[in-house]
Length: 384
Ligand code: SF4
Image 1: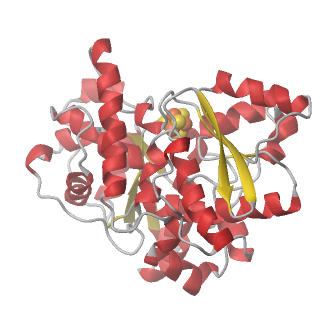
Image 2 (image 1 turned 180 degrees about the vertical axis):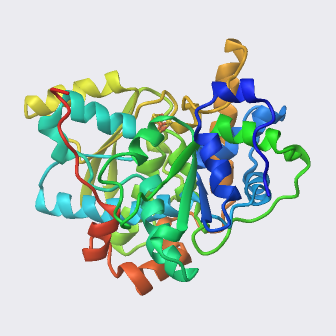
């Protein structure tokens, strides 16, 4: 049984989400499931004095199990699922030449920006929920079945690099399991704080694996944590789905985003796919302007709010000295690509757990069940 927080005054500084997680872990009637975003595993170790950008997925999984979660699953799994849905959606839009360019929708701050500033272009956002919300919906439906539970027995917690993810989990449409799909979101820093408070020796933990099948992931799911990663993962799968041929190089370095804006043409069979990768919301304005003038000839645009993607999110460990920030980000990025290149499988459509999920439950990408659980709608917030 976990006790409460030891330092009440310091704890008061934190959002009471930590207390909500403790309540879940102490409640024997709740079956607790946790997921971790890709960017968390290359940053959390910094809060325990380890080197900037240390890659520690195994220690993170072990720490979450020690905290008492019944299932330690992974957002990387649902990042692979996002690629199946978003890639299929892109192929459909390109084939029909409709609602192009298609924008990614996994950054909730970007989605909210579109709802507030450019609601007339909301139908250009992919209808795919973010990996966090896809995971929440799957945990409380398919996952519930695997554990002989119902959605209301499950408490679903996610560990994310930013606070916008909490806002996203509270959107009224994020309850396709019949319950709220993600109940509580902790940031990376909050999880590190909780681990310390519970006297878990993170640095010396033996590495453990994520639980199967919903913690199974490919390298493509992992690179969602960096700018350009969603685009690269989508190209790896999209290329093979369209051409039925293996992609020449799994490393699609042309779209690796190390700038605020980059564009490239990717040859996919007979199709020349024009794509752009944008980091920072002000950098998307030229594309919106081009759309207004009928001159935006992109097929697919990835937009992330944070400068390097989620590895630099606001909920990540603080880098105390500003001069160390570039090194921290560089190390977090190289840790992310290292994890990808060391993965046995590096394309989302090759994930065996994803194949089984479609075979046994969802049937087809963009099918009826996928629409019900994995896709969403957006609303204008212009006058709110
Ligand atoms: Fe959150 Fe930043 Fe990632 Fe967007 S890019 S999901 S704001 S951490």
